[in-house]
Image (cartoon, rainbow, N blue to C red; front, side):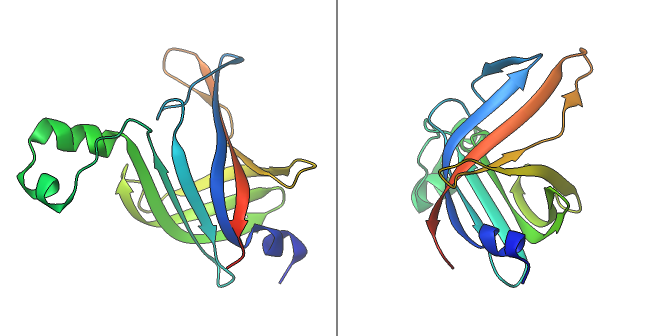
Length: 148
């Protein structure tokens, strides 16, 4: 297994999530204090889960019996997907095969991989220009939680 892939293998905990809009950093889509886990396995599978800090807690009864508004807020405060991954130069490509929210099934999510001196992993999206002409970049930094 290549050294770069080996460095990714394991469980990662969200440390920092930043969003740049036209060069100005601000809270990301799920707000300040979001939590998350990113897993890379040696057999080429990955999964990512990110949640807003203020996401409503819905137990089994709340999910079945809860009102539609609370269910929609809970879904909107959550990102979850899984599939295979591969390294392509300095990028990691997540090939989404399963997605709870949003529906990214069949898409490849490309992220630039970088490491800081403390060993934190940062995955940065390519710059995207919105319909309003704003340039958006997502940078998510992870701390190694455990080896798988």
